[in-house]
Length: 312
Image 1 (cartoon, helix red, strand yellow):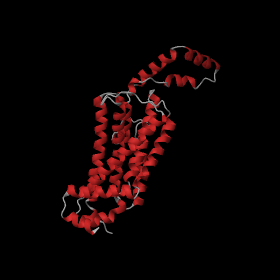
Image 2: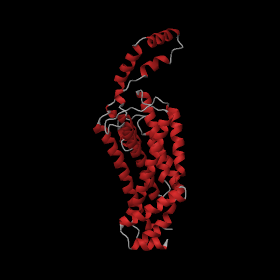
Image 3: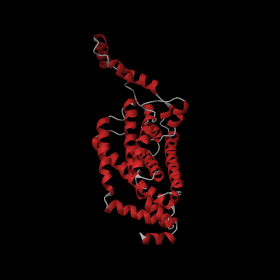
Image 4: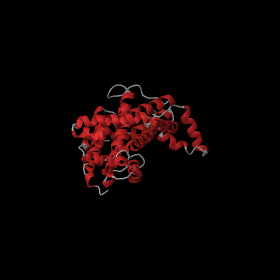
């Protein structure tokens, strides 16, 4: 530790980033910090099992599946860094007084967490492919759906990671961090715009500030939600098939091409400009996710700069 303090006194921010980044990767390798990656694979497999292989075939499946995938990203991101700063707060305080730049310390964590998030996204997509989920062949931004999809998942995971890093910078104990995390998780789930929709008022403002909302919109936009069919109309009829007359109607619909026409008609009524599969819309979602992560990091740095005021 003394060696690191000496280095802080004679090293600029970039040098300190390099020192701490090396430390984080040594921890990743030698102290088995990678053991959380199999958990990411298990969560992705569970969600794939629930979503099924036809995730990208119709509007209802896509919207529900996008929300489930966002939940995976949030879970991974939150657990990546919710305790990383507060569990070594005493060390950070001592080294800060010896010349450590907080921005360099957080910068090292940002780079390291970007790497961890990338690994988690690669693992998740590999699990989805292995399970047999059928992905669209093309996408509008890069031309490759897997790449656009991967960028979206990484931005969601990284935004969640940076929010957790912010919390870890603000609170003083790991217990407090783990207490705050469920509240943040509930806010992201409630205001994602899938379970509940908000058209105005304070709730709509909160919704636009959540990365879960923009992540769901981004996934639906990348998968071209508005170009899919919808089974909503037929499903509404199908659930009453216990009535003999309706069962006869359902059988007739399934024997003819009326089912396809119903799906098209239902899809036309369910199109949303929010999910437009256009480059500007997708880039907007990506940009908002990046901004949310940047704001969280900025707040975290500002709060951690005041670490010398700790009473303990």
